[in-house]
Length: 138
Image 1: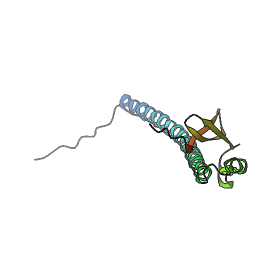
Image 2: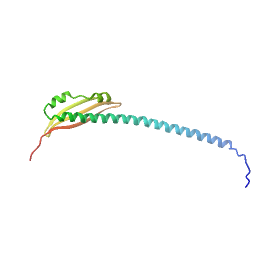
Image 3: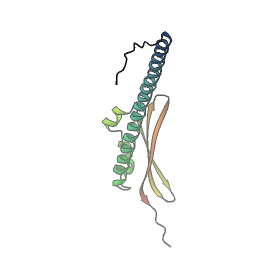
Image 4: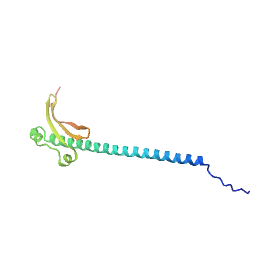
């Protein structure tokens, strides 16, 4: 089987179309890369916010555990001594701890609130723990 070699050249028009396709592909690739970088930046911000929130929850739970461990004896003194741990205070921007004693018909509770500043809006975590309950016997 003998084949004749033909000298095929791309017409000038086809070369121009390929160049346009390459430019369009490069523009689309640039747009995708820009979008991925923007999403990555936003995801890093969400991860940081989540870490702050989780840190505040753990700190509030630790404070409630410490406050309620001693029962009613000396509760007001423990509330006066409460402060954010150094690690949490350095990690949360403008971190503040508020503790309140709540006495009502069901017993004594401790309300722990941790506030911190986040770009755009302040954020807080609030947990309540029972120190003692008033049992109602039938």
